[in-house]
Image (cartoon, rainbow, N blue to C red; front, top):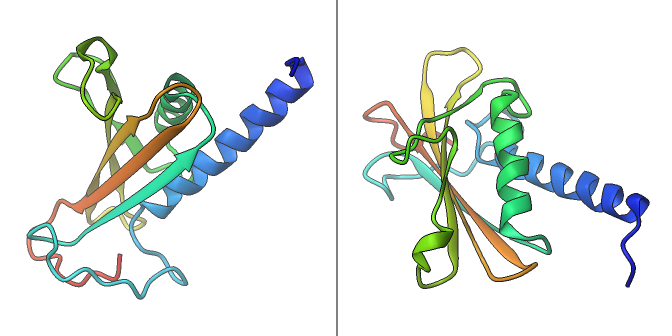
Length: 149
């Protein structure tokens, strides 16, 4: 099929909308989306989500990075500095990691009342135009057991 400007724009809008939903889903719980308490799976409250996309890893990484830099869907996300010295995401493509791991990212999410923070870790993997985004959220406060996340 031939790609047109219109089809690329529709695809981009869809990817941004879905990724915004992914990032929002990994955020701290705000009613009515509560009711999924975690009782210490990660030694503290945490959450893992996994999404399949019909988009390449580079597109997904750049879209998520833009969302992080702009504050995310609720304006309370802040990209972290990686061990590689880049903001938001480390590019791991040159290492040919098994499982087609392409990027690792991280952001801090400040909860609505700014009392607590969550670390959001993001793994992007997959060959070609099919990618998987795995998002992990971990409460940064000790003792956040059963926080309805």
